[in-house]
View 1 (cartoon, helix red, strand yellow):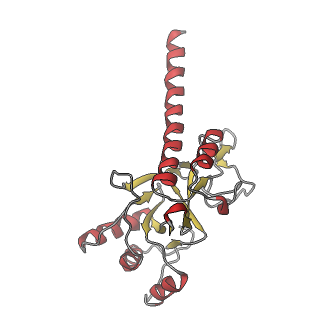
View 2 (tube, helix red, strand yellow):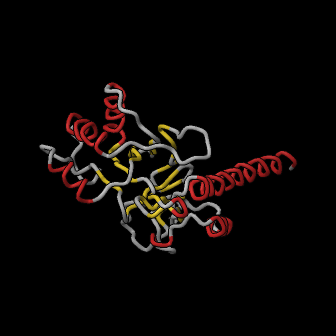
View 3 (cartoon, one colour):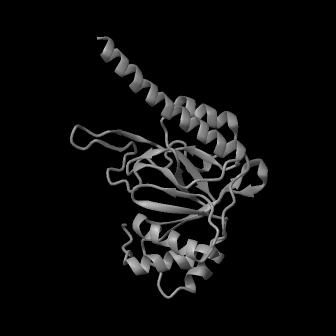
Length: 231
C-alpha cells in the first residue's frame, strides 16, 4: 500500500511540476519579454482507442489543442494579472503566442514565425548555419519547426515570395493575426520544445529579419520535395 501511495505522489508531483512550468513560462513570455500570450484550448479524452483530441467542436481540427478558442486571439495580453489568472484556472493549457501583435508596454510587436515540416526544417537550419546567418529561438514539435523572425508587413512578405521561383505549399507564415504554441506546451501532435533555445536573460530574445531566412527554407523544402499543403 505504501508503495502504491508513493508512486501516486511521485506522479502527482510530476504533473504539478509540468503545470508550474507552464505558468512560469507564460509569465516570462508576457511580462519579461512582452510577448502577448493566451491559453490554447487544450485536449480532452477521446475514448480508449482514440486517446486524446482537441477540445474544440471541430472533429477535423488541424492544430489540436494548440489554438485559441475561448478567449479568442484578440484577448492575447502581456498583463501579468490576466496571465496569472488564466493559468491558475487552466494550469495545463498550452501557451499560445499571438504573432505580430502589439507587444504591451514595450511599444513594439511580438515576433512572427516561419514554419516548415521537421525534416526540411533540420535541413534549413543546417543551411543557415553554413552561411553564417544568425538565428534566434526556434520552436519545434514532432511535426514542424518554427523559426521566430522579426515582425513583417504583408507587403514585405509578398515581395519576398514573389522573388522566389516556387514557394512550396507546406511553408507557413505566422504574422499579424496568426499564432503558434510555445514551450513547454503539450498539443495534439506532441510536446512543444525549443530546437534552438533563447539565451538566458530577462530581455526578449533577438530574432532575425524574415528576409534572412526565406531563401534557405524555400530551398530546403524544394530539395526535400516537401511541398504538399497538408504537411
